[in-house]
Image (cartoon, rainbow, N blue to C red; front, top):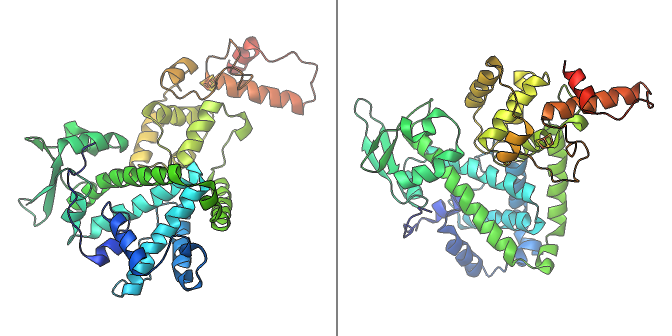
Length: 390
Ligand code: SF4
């Protein structure tokens, strides 16, 4: 992974408080604990640290519940030592709650919120941007663009190649970027400055770094220690499951009828998990085939890690206009988008079940029969599904 071989030093305590997730922030966090005589256990119930816990809860809530990423505003005064301590330790508290939950959905959502917040803050921080970028990339260069008075950033091709496949849109194809001697130009586009485009790329590294940090913590965390966070964990996981239910879009088809491949693509995107290209095209084409509106289909992508409203709307529109046929089972299996194993789902086990549309039609037919109380009709089979297709 092309990360910097040596991290640049960050001495500014305001910067370390504003961006506590920086790779350099770990050591600083430790020194803040030591300097104030605080143990990690104190964060749980020491009365004088109630402000830290409150800020940590708000930060966690904001990251997890905010659909478009966390709010970048903070009410903490970072010109004071207590303000900086509160900001750093509240981040630590939020991270410990997430890790103690051992809940992958909560983890993915929190990381997405923190990475989105970082993307927005980095994009605005002209003063510190090169230092921040150098903490996540193996190099960064800048030059003034000819014609306008804007800074344009160049980044090493190795970093770009590793990170760009995770972001949708023509801008992120290497063929569409100017490249000179192994450096890729991150010029301004789609209403964003070069700094904001580069910050979008950094978001992927931040996500990766946070994921690694939390996974390591979870691997080392004992059951006893995790149990100390039982109350905040219970509160946030309860809120998260309510939120996920609320956000799930209503669809034309009854959700119980959805084939597992469609259900898993929708659920994974909703939980902020990346779904591969085949899964996304399938999701849009299948939605169209079962009569969902373009708006409904676009809403399925709203929590995707690389979500952009414009790009999603353009790509979904292409699929609707060109009337793509959804992938069949064998193509989905090849692309690792079929989540079932033999025995998991009675319909998927049928020999005739070669397409997810057959699945949903079989389910709908069966539902219709049940509601018509025609229990004596024969078991659903291929011929019936085919006739339902005609
Ligand atoms: S067997 Fe087909 S319908 Fe069933 S989950 Fe797999 S891809 Fe979907």
